[in-house]
Length: 350
Image (cartoon, rainbow, N blue to C red; front, side):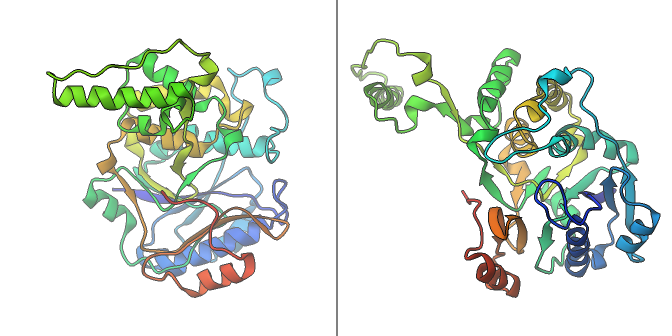
C-alpha cells in the first residue's frame, strides 16, 4: 500500500470566495494534522496549487516536514464544454466563481488519474479549513485495508437544493439507460408521491404498495387496488434527497475510481458539465458514485475523533461546523467553537 494525504490550496491572505486567510488556515490545518496524526505515521502530504506557492513559500509551509511536497496544477474548462455555456460566476444561494468549479472537477474527476500516475493507491483529503482536534493513534489506511473498506468519511450531510437541481433525475436516466442496478442509491431517490405526500394519489399509491406486499406474503388473498387517473409529470417526479458525504475529509482506494463502470459514469457526468453550469459539486457526485457502485459493507463512517470543517463568512457560521468525536465530545476545541458560534454544527447526521 502506498497512501498519501491530499490538499488543494491557495497562497492567499484573502481568498476571493470567502475573504479568509487561506495560507494561515492551511498552516493551522497542517500543524493539527501532524500533532494529532502524521507525526506518528509520516504519510506523504501532497499540496496541489496553481503556481502561487513559490519556493520560499513552500519551505515556510513545510517547515522541515519532509513528507510535504507541492504539486503544481493548472485548471481550465474542458475542451468539450462550450465556453458560452459556462457562466463566469454561478449564481445561487451564494455565488461561486470559476476557481471553485475547477475544484469540483479536480476532486470528482481529475484527482484519481493524477494519483495513479504518481504511484499512490490510497489517499485521504483535507482542506485548508479541515482541522483534526483529536489524537488518532491508529493508521487510517491500515484500518481501511483490514476492514475491506473502499470509502470512508467522517460526516454525512444533506446538501442544498440549489446545487442539486436536476442532478438526481440525470443520474437516474443514466442508470436506466445503462441497465445498472445501483447498490443503494435508490434509497436516496424516490417517487415524490411515496414520500408522505398528502395528495389522494400519494396516499392511495402508498396503500397499494402495502396491499401488494401483503399479497406477496399470502398469494391466495387478494386486495382491491385503488385506481386513479394519471397526474401531470410534475406531480409524480423523482425526488433526490441530496444525502451524501461531506467529502472535505474522505479516505478512499484509488483503484475503485478506475473501475470501468465507475469511470464511465464519471465521464458521462463530466461531459454534461454540471459542475461548471449548475454547480453539481464533488460532494454529490462522489457520494452518488459510492452509493451506486459500492455495497454498504465497503463504506465506513468514522465517529471516534473530533473534526472541524466550518465555512465562516462575516464571522457567521455559513455551513458545516465541528463534529465531536465519541471519545472527546466535550473537548476544548468543541467548547471553544460552541462559545464562538453558538452551536457545534449545521450539517445533519442521519
